[in-house]
Image (cartoon, rainbow, N blue to C red; front, top):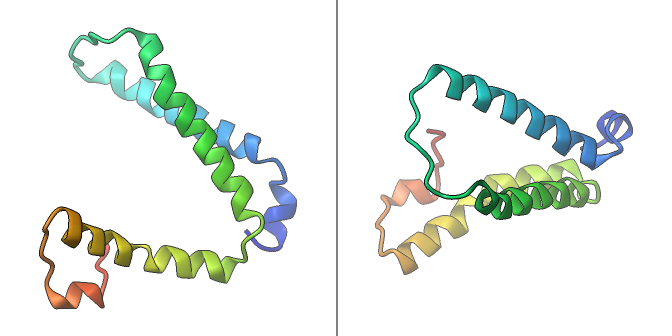
Length: 106
């Protein structure tokens, strides 16, 4: 978030709020038009994962203020490598050799 975007969006809480309000609106519309199974868990149990999700997003946006845009792009581009390595080590997954070099967007 270099340049004008940092100046335009100084408050990370606002970005997270807008993100969550839009997500809530889309989810509400989806629920209105689709058949949903009954929820057996009490609603307060959803609050734990909701709180951690909101806090992690806020921390992420705050941390990105201190990282340059090229660093962000390089980090996103290379994050698939440790994911694939851990998949191979932990889950015993096998990937074709070309997938370690070329990442195809699904």
